[in-house]
Each structure stands twice: as C-alpha cells, then as structure tokens.
Length: 277
Figure: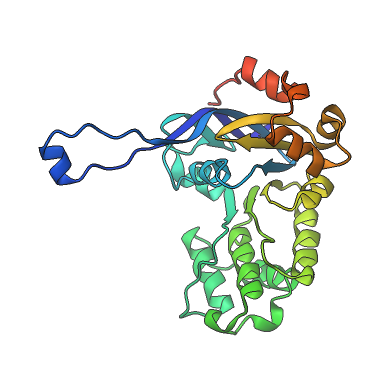
C-alpha cells in the first residue's frame, strides 16, 4: 500500500510585485520553478532515500508534503489523506524532522514534548515520551531547559518532537548534518528499529554512505525533476558505479551513457499513478 503518493507535483515560487509596481502596471516577473512534474509513490514500511544536490528541490518537496507550502499543480497525499484538502489528518500521519534547529527557549525538554503532544490531542503521553527520551539518549536531559542544550542534543529533541504522536510516516530532512558520531549512531539505531516495527521512513541526506546502507529505494532530484528512481543496489549496478556516491556523481553530471534514464524513473515518466481516494 502506498502511504505517500505524489502526482504531477509542480511548485513555482512567484515573486510578489510591490504596490508601486502594481499601480504602474509592471508585468509579473517570472517565478522560480522548484519542482517540475514530480511523480513518486512510497510504500508502507519502506526506508526511502530522496537525494540531490543543494537547490534540487528536496526541502520544497518535503514542505509541500508537510502542508507548509502549497503546490502550484498536482496532488500529494499521506496515508490516503490529501495534504491540501484534508490537512489535519495528513499532518497527523506525518512526523517531520527539519534541517533547522528550531526550539522554544522557555521550556525544558519534557515540557517541549508534552506541548508537542498537546498539538495532536495527546494528554497522557508520558510513557511514550519516556521511551523516546531513553532511546535518543535524552533521559538525563529531560528537565533541562532547551537553551542549555548543545546543538547535537537540540537535534535529538527535534527527532523526539517528530515522533511524539507516533506517526506512521517519518520524514528526516538531513538529520545528521553536523552532528557527532555518537548521535548519528544512536539516531540510526532508533530509526531502524522504528522502520522494523512498520514505520515508513523518508530520508534526505548528503551522506550517501548512509543512504546506501539504510535505504531500500532512492530517488534522485536534479533541478526539480526526478532523474533516477530505483532500488538502491539496482541503481548502482545499472549506472555502473562502485557505490551509490559514484552513481550519484555520474547521474548528476549527466553521463552520456545514462541518456536513457534509469528503469523506475523512466517508468514514472510514462505511467502516472492513480489518484488516491
């Protein structure tokens, strides 16, 4: 069963004209196209990698998926809930760990997680909060104010916030960028365990060795379009690289030998998926 379904997704950021420009009749300037007709499905229980260079459209896609940005065209659903027309239920099915360290400096770690639980109507969630804190190595920081934590500890709290309502789909947007080896290992052990328990994981990362080790399938974005989509091992074999990093470099550089595209990516272009109810 597909838990994430993206159909013909296009996103164009259109600059706003100033009042003076509108009064003078200045034409609307062209916008920036961040996503261009993206089609993608992710199955329940997958560990899926979304890869691409900076500016490829990964964070924009996640923003649309999370309901933070409206699509210009296309349809996106999470667990069957349209992110535009059934936003509350789609958001409840999704846990997102953002790139940025965003936190409220006035609360402790435990208070932060209780408040996050309240956003989803969960009043008695301390048992699960305790389990998350222990799994992420935060148990001894539970009563510490957020502003007193190191950057790595704050990132762990972001992960905990994304998991506090037990979402079936977890999105990790470069979760290990700039963190130490201990956090990386602790995080992946916990996330792999959640995946084994049935959670679907969508990962974006620039650490391609992580993606190769963890992700069963990967999609590669370039200039807002999917240019490769396949099972990780199959993609590496097809491109002919020694590993995923070498395959990624060849695809991003537009190796002439790959002009036909990768197997799943080509099928995605030719076979649009059915719109979910």
